[in-house]
Length: 241
Image 1 (cartoon, one colour):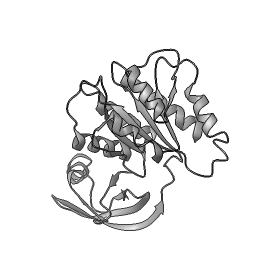
Image 2 (tube, rainbow, N blue to C red):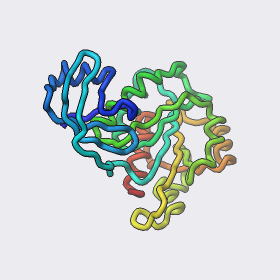
Image 3 (tube, rainbow, N blue to C red):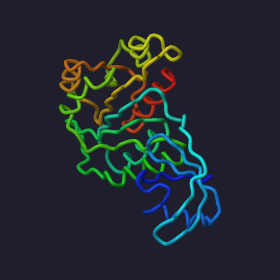
Image 4 (tube, rainbow, N blue to C red):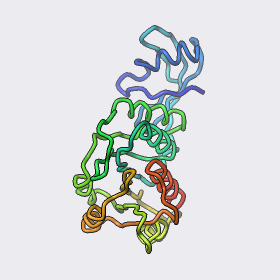
């Protein structure tokens, strides 16, 4: 069943790039079924009435709340990597259930440009493909010190670090949420910081500790920056869902 996110103010009309994809690529016709997602967690089962070059008109037949979003909310502050690695990170983290992604600028960040419009499109496509009820927000890039100031907005703030010897990610989660997953009554809200290709500096780790972040280990091997966020997110979803 084709599904597409639409602006809640335009529902049940479809506009923008989705029109070309649905009409010319998928070759949908009037009368065919389609699911419209409003980005607020609702799915509207509809049928196509007319297809124009710039607009597709639909009729909503029924609506319901989607139950596909994870209970845990995870914001990933990802140090900007080189090349197209950020595309992969956004696509796969969206599939895994991330709530928001914050492009992070650290002392060792080498990437200089942020492609917010492109990244938001990638998140949208991945959300549609994976059956998400929302599209993760891709924020404007923030400097390391500014992200540390967000700590109080979260129940738990983590910073994976390859030199951390004592605290494993699982231990940090169990310590903060000892009754997970069955008896959680309030959705956990977690912020996790992922370092650049060269890793966090010792000074950055100390600043994070002083700000209330918990350094954690993701295992015995050193993960690439494009792998670390995926591994951490998957582990968090497994432990707390």
